[in-house]
Length: 133
Image 1 (cartoon, rainbow, N blue to C red):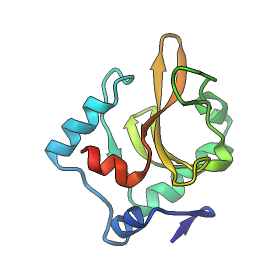
Image 2: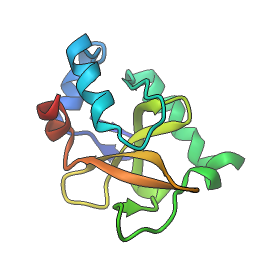
Image 3: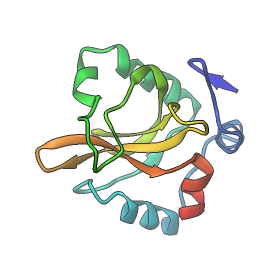
């Protein structure tokens, strides 16, 4: 399955075909603990329709606010919208995304580090994220 030209990880495709992936209470607590650069994390993974519609962020006037900042401490730091598919949110203004600049797309989120917003790797893959939960 592809969305906006991105081939989805097999497990994500399976979740979307079955109506999405709702996190259990335990998984939610583990994910919140991983989102160390979010003040009040309220994470959720989106279903197919939300993933499709939220991709329009990258063509909006607000897109520049979500690119992040270059960083050597927090990778990837800055994101390339042409290589990114948003699949959920860490909180209301912090997308969770697949970053396709790596062989197997890594899972990243937009977090605050001091006065800067940076994209931070949450897991090396979608499957890797679920293994952490």
